Image 1 (cartoon, protein in one colour):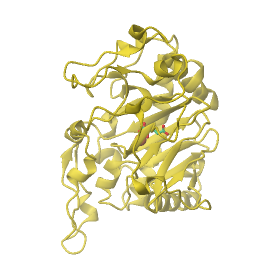
Image 2 (spheres, protein in one colour):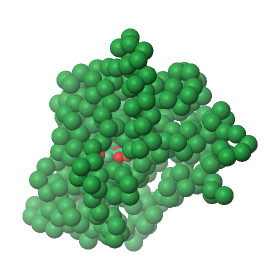
Image 3 (tube, helix red, strand yellow):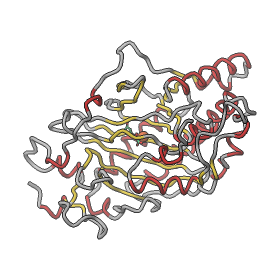
Image 4 (cartoon, helix red, strand yellow):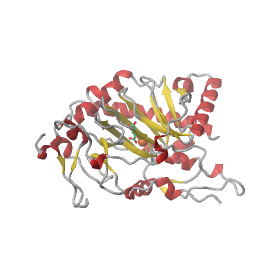
Length: 363
Ligand SMILES: O=C(O)CCC(=O)C(=O)O
Ligand SMILES: [Fe+2]
């Protein structure tokens, strides 16, 4: 066993004093002789949570290059495909997106996340906080509803737009991440132009309505170390993302599951693709035409998995509501209440799904 001082994450004063002190999952796994998971990492599945979806289902693939090929027919067709993917899946794989494979590898493993998670515990602990408004936040998964159950995941979250913050270690990570976040922002802005059109608007509609010039972007990296009892643990529990579009990559291990037709669909992403999902604020803006889909990450006993999610959202001071042009006085009334994006983010503090708090009951 490593000495306890090396593995403990200090609980903050507001944490329940009866809860055992927290350790990162990485430190736990690296402590000698771990053959079973501590009981507070054991996740009780709800009965239908293990249902797997139809193995013949395939997640839609969108060819990004066709959006700007100069051929209006191709653009119209791909916008139709995006519309269908957002309505039927809320997730799609994006290929030919133009972000270099070398940059994706660098940010995931070479100069980036892998090296960050390998830093000594004290250096990561500098950023440990429960305050979601700290621009750099390191932590380990905890169920904020009960604070006595932990998830098999360590993470780092950094605010990268409108102001770029980042870590100074490992060397080179900040530069690689800055370039990566910029490229992801460009991809998401282009997709949101297509999505504006798929909703029947002119291409700059979402950019203007959501003040994307000051849009809020996060860099969220997740580490899921190998787990001795993967069937009992959960990497990240079922949730939806808050922004407009999230771009996700991972190191080829697999583990993401998404809700599709009431079952869990296991995603095997194509190499070098982005997994894109429509998040809560696209559901709100589209008045429910596009759904923000529940997803989760399961763990495995063999390999360390790293994923990077880049959520791209409205600016924090934007008041978001269903687009008025999509509503009328008869059958299409608003089914979400207006709320400032920043206030919406604060809703996550009590652990309930935020969307439920702004969705109006259907008459
Ligand atoms: O690791 C994954 O595949 C999912 C991560 C995720 O959903 C998130 O960070 O919001
Ligand atoms: Fe997510």
